[in-house]
Image (cartoon, rainbow, N blue to C red; front, side, top):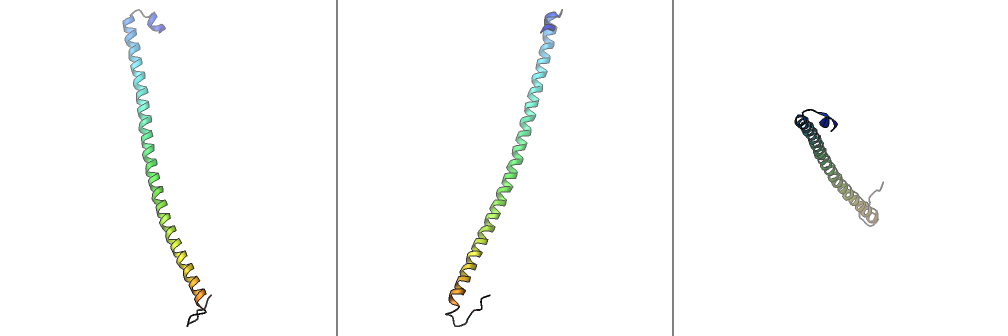
Length: 95
C-alpha cells in the first residue's frame, strides 16, 4: 500500500497491485484444487482398501461357518458313537 501511495504513476501501481493480487488468488486456488484432488484420490484408495477388507471378512465368515458346521457334525457323530456303542450289534472301538 505504501508503494501505491509513493508511486508517481498511481494508475500503473494500482494495476500492478491488482496483477499481484490476481496471481496470489490464482495460486491459492491452484493449491486448494491440488489438495482436493489429492484428498479425493486418498478417499478412492481407502474405498478400495475397505472393499478388500470387507471381502476378506466375508471369506473368513464363510470359513468359520464351515468350521462350526464340521465341529457340530463331529460332536454329533462322536456323541452318537459313545452312546450307542454299548447297544449296537457291532461294538465300536473308541480311541
